[in-house]
Length: 487
Image (cartoon, rainbow, N blue to C red; front, side, top):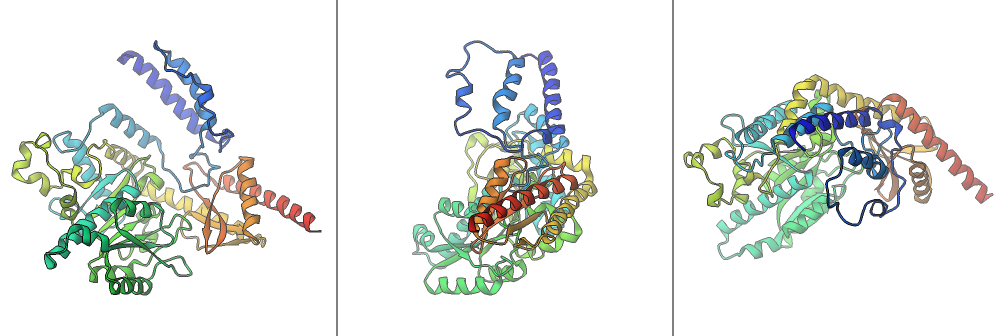
């Protein structure tokens, strides 16, 4: 394919994507295929000779689309939103076209410098304390990670390194292995499972801290667990506080947890993967109060800020805590600018902020979206989703067969039929088997709960009304069947 054909095929692909997004609600939201369906539809071996682009595009519809879950359908209410917008797609296209691997400043100066500035822009949009910003002479700064899971792992490993150094200063005879065997990290019993996976990688212990009636970790509970562990000879070193839990979008109490962490030399990392985008709206910024106590903070613009995957933004208050943990400098990655120390001063060596070496030009997506929507456009988008979620909550409350299971603050509603877990499991299965809308469940205090997340950029009130009608119809049929079986 030469440049001439690329121009032609590129325009065709843009048209295909635009048609897909414009007409997505005409597609069945959840696929009706069995595991292994695809292998039977493609040859056993790759082609020996080139195939035509037209044939490949036809096979996208014949082979790929039947197995796609349409996350951007206005009838998709599962998990959390995954962000997408035309400006973001254009930025991603340009990133792919440039194709640089921005592991260092010299490998592509614009890739590193734009990312640093965009993280400062976004930090200011959510009113992060200035200590987290790079600016011209700050000690903090931000970086794009692949996912919130990566951000938590990076923070945990940096915290582990810092704790080991601190403890060995006072206890020279303790080996690194002995210290690691006593390190303990904390998180909410509602936290994402990725925190447990990160602990496995870091080789440390983890304790899940019980939450209160609002599914929030409180200071008194954390203090009790820390005191017990210290008495048992363990070394508390890390807390992952959650703002907007995956199960029910609950919020840990940073104003209570932060002072304890600072007093105990515990690194406080904040995971706000979903909820963080809402902090660009002044009326939701209170949910971030207490961030000033944190050492690191992360959220995913690729969930709810119209920037497509992957774009997980992470800030640290003292970037040397991060770079000292990950800095490896082989000669082939050095260049003349290193000698002056200016790159470290300007936080321009982002390879030391992450697990992998290479990094894509992801900040282009941010730049395009921020400029083409503006802060006010992004705020209205968040507010619209929150309004629609509360509209759905009101529909649930008007039907006394159902109950709301957690506070509705942002764009997630947790609800269920009053009755047994088995009843709700069947209801969810019937809803998803019908494939008109798509939901996923969670467990809250032993209850099987249905999660209704506002996800699609194009979702409107009409889609919520359709979803609720579908849910109540399924519920009525199920309750009728249940009643007949007991009569």
